[in-house]
Picture: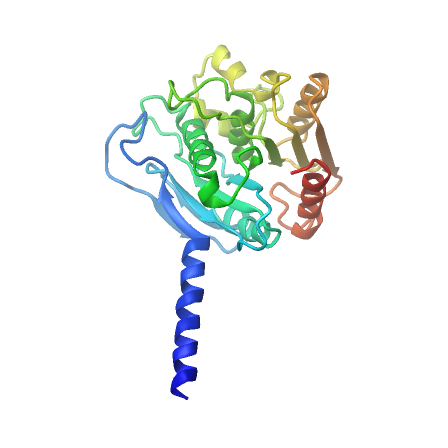
Length: 303
């Protein structure tokens, strides 16, 4: 009996240790956060039964790390950017839930708790989120061996406004918003965009996200710069897009125009448009349905 108790205790300690390694949280910046206006940390977390767990007023960015077991690890990694209109973050269904689904496939997942634009805490609110996305890519690529991942198989995934951030990372990587003299590539190797905000133009763009990121009096030049369908080049990463044609929050034209730009530049891309389903896929399609298409694309694309 004593030996059994000792065995169970040891097993419990081992499982706890594995869990602590598999899911950890780190600050994105080891020192001073760039572009910061110092002030009190006012971050809030709110449970919302109908939508998600909401994180708001983020001023100290972080990274939650979900690693698969060593025997399952494929070497692929996905950086996840939750949505929320650049005003909040949906951290469960667009964060930890999908991270765990990736882990089951042997894919490492990293959820970015990116700063939410606010002129009270940022010198330039328009670049705060992309700074954090680039910092996440930098950390993961530089620590690839530690995380058991291939530094050439690091993708970025985003929902809604998080899709805008992910597509910004995939189209603006030649502009180093952090680490200006650095050598580590900030280019994601692939993108997965779910109901994404892509454009900030008046007709198809999500104006709420635009106003939150750029401010209500943004110049036409700034609007064009962050309308990412206009920023696609032949160096843009391969991309998977999924959207609902019935989406009344973020029009499906955001995905269509981005796909057209990718196709024009010869970038391997796939897009699936559902005839039904609200923004966020709350009732249709099921997670298993659209996520299965993501997995199939990752496989056929060699990721």
